[in-house]
Image (cartoon, rainbow, N blue to C red; front, side):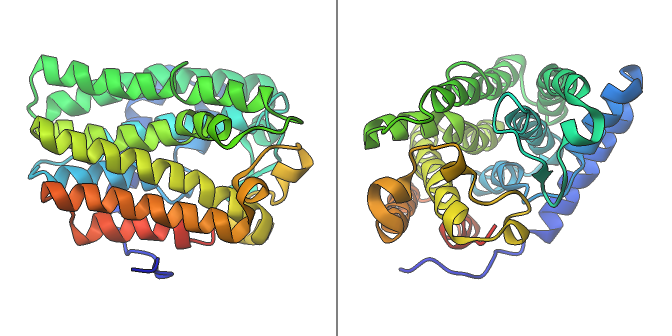
Amino acid sequence: MPASSTAPDFTAARARVAQALDALCDRSLPAIGGQVGEAMRYSITGEGKRLRAVLVMLTYEACGGVGDVAPLAAAVEVVHAYSLVHDDLPCMDDDDLRRGRPTVHKAFGVSVATAAGMAMVPLAARAAWDAAIGLGLDVGTTADIVRVLMRASGAGGMIGGQLLDLEGEGQHLSYDQLERIHRCKTGALIEASVEIGARAALAPADTLAALGRYGRCIGLAFQIADDVLDVTATSDELGKTAGKDVAFQKSTYPALLGVDGAIARAESLVQEGCNALAGAGVLTPSLEATARYIVARRS
């Protein structure tokens, strides 16, 4: 089945996440105050696809969850926001534009942006804990959810992948090396989003395994699609600077496989992930549509 170019309508889900993020900022940021607090709010509440948060909600519902999971989804979104703040810093990707507006370090300065990003990690951990307890989950399950989120954001996930990405600039990486980078840098939090939603709904082990495979597949497909967009889309379409991969001499999937080959690889990963869910009986129309849109999107 070919990827659909029509974006799934997650307006209601995104609105629920936005409300949860606003409430989290109103509750937590006054204690931080100053420019750091302002920079955190600027990043956390900025416009975005909210894909990771939406995946938490869709997976929770697919596994039979019936509570208000938006606050837990918002905690995942805070981790994603932190990663963007640090990814844009001059010592990293040095970008001026994110989500169609100045990056945090351009709006508030490098020192404030660095501190704001660091502060978002414990904020996300506390928000995830409070949200899981609010869903009526026991302490053990709640701790597992926080562990999954922090593991995805740490040395074995985004931070480790970012380091490998920086070390790989100017080098000709193999496909296996590139995949290792992006399963950590981009894929880890997407996979964690799926797992967190399932754990919050108390999904059984076999369902968790199938969703884990789905999360790994669409996480890597998302990065492949990003690489393709970097060479085929405009800055206006992306809401960030296009052509950065070439400028930084990064190895990318289009460079290794060609644009058509990269798209084909992403589509095969999406199919693999959807097949895993179908085999476990948890492939909902929304989870399939989200996976396919990951490849077809233009931003």
